[in-house]
Image 1 (tube, rainbow, N blue to C red):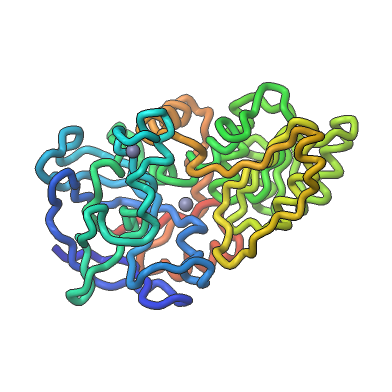
Image 2 (cartoon, protein in one colour):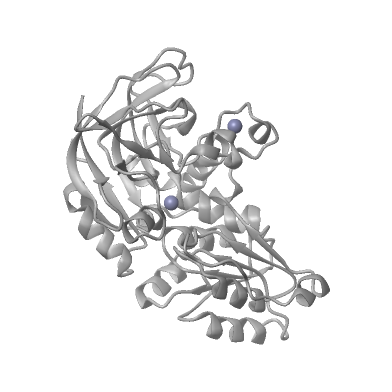
Length: 371
Ligand SMILES: [Zn+2]
Ligand SMILES: [Zn+2]
């Protein structure tokens, strides 16, 4: 079948909206009609050339939609079901899934940009195999994806909002609650207030942090962070660090979450300086592939002050469980999702959405597909 889709033909480059061909689902695969897709900084890395992958590919990795058809062997979904597409699949069987670390599922080991796990393609452009970003390609009206990439969600909630659960919300929320292990009374710094950072702020708030300092150079994002639970907001990490020391008897934060779209070695070093004894720096944003090796931190501080630097992928979430828990928080009014969607776009206007992201005009911009 034909589908309108935003594809990248060259890198650096810009997304082009074209007609692509989508196959029928094969075994354990599902044809989804996407209703909406968030735009995340990881979609932009390939445009700028920060990341490289095989071309052409269809981007988008934070979507929600409705099941159109299922292939043989699909036991958990049927046509009409509402689903969130998780940017990391979870097979439930590999050693990582089986030990409760579904965000590290072996099916995800060969994703990012490529064909389906069996090495063949379900999307085609002018007869050529079209790579699917993170196996899901949510910037296409229709896509065939693995059953393991989909989480069934209740059908009484807006998919234009639930799409955020496919990447940004779990990534941010889990960075605070799982990776940083924020506890009641903690002092937490969140750096970068996009979709991930806004969710990290909310995660810290839900976990009971006493002081939540948001850092972003954009004034509107600092205001939004404070509406979503930040107790203070600053334009730079230097100002935030000074403040954090002033309210912790000089000690520093319990945790710092780097939620900006493209963190650098220098950012990690600054955050490392901002945390106190026993503190944790969580590196959540995806660095540019061009960022050189080497974080300039003092080893004596690492051991002598028992500091930690840890990476977190998808907020260390288990998508099939945690996406439903996030929905419960949303229903309870404790997780603000609608407020995070600051602008909606038609797929044809994806170029504007990218420009707005790069200019810091949104918490989350969402592409709504034409029906
Ligand atoms: Zn993302
Ligand atoms: Zn697995």
